[in-house]
Image 1 (cartoon, rainbow, N blue to C red):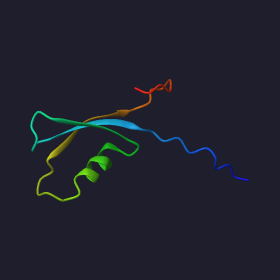
Image 2 (tube, one colour):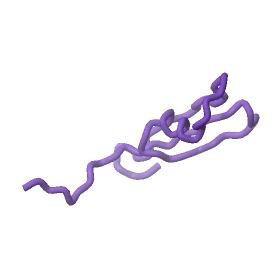
Image 3 (cartoon, rainbow, N blue to C red):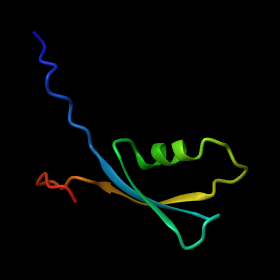
Length: 68
């Protein structure tokens, strides 16, 4: 019998990105997806030029299993 009680371990990430339309501002977030997937969800409308740039994407859980 397959044990479905325990969920598979996800690899959460913290990320930061900037948007040229909002100078001197950073958006900081937490996701279990890639940073690019998450940012693209926040920009559902296609623009002629991509206005955002991912500046940071790191694991949210350290190797010793503590949360950053």
